[in-house]
Image 1 (spheres, one colour):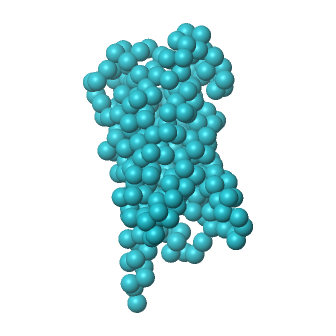
Image 2 (tube, helix red, strand yellow):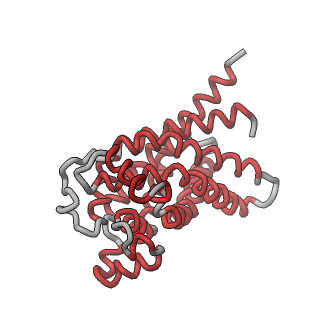
Image 3 (cartoon, one colour):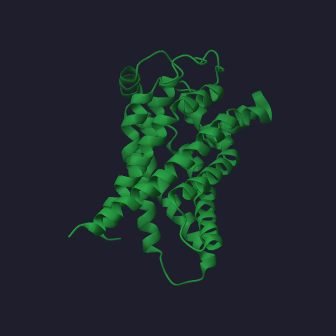
Length: 273
């Protein structure tokens, strides 16, 4: 991918990430508190709905930028004249690679944010407590569970998004507009959010668990078994509706803003002498 394309993907992804994280933060807080082991009310209920927003604001630009740089680069790297039936596979591989890289930035931000969402401590206090009690590895608690959540999510969302855009483009005879891309993103995101909610519940439980507990040191399967034993199927899908709402709206804003910003930057680049 050439330098202008690299820079464009970085800036467009970063702008889209910041926009969606700040706009939809309250829904994310509600979802986290619904999934918290102490229950919604004890985790804060509807109070302090923007708790943890500094962590999200700091991490959102580099996180989204890292994802889209990797996503676009791997798509470019895998581009061949092979059968169009292989395109979804290429999109899956590109999205998976993007998630692995982005999670290196996302997970520390997510750990601090989620703990702030369910406690009265400030973002700075939580960050320093994690470093003091657990060290750097504490900031990466739940990395594997986050990757195991994000990769299946992206395997569903991005091929579906790209396929819906291609179908819409074919039906109308020209490339989709940014708002049409956003609609496709909303549908793809909502569907992917619904089917991957149990993995999101497991990730939340691992990140919020007390230091030294079996949940904190365990894996995704043990976290899922624990939720199943205590809460059954409703526990595995705790927060599914605010998660679907947030990610559907997020897909609309995020992927629409990405396409719009990327198109605008590429147009500005072409207009330069």
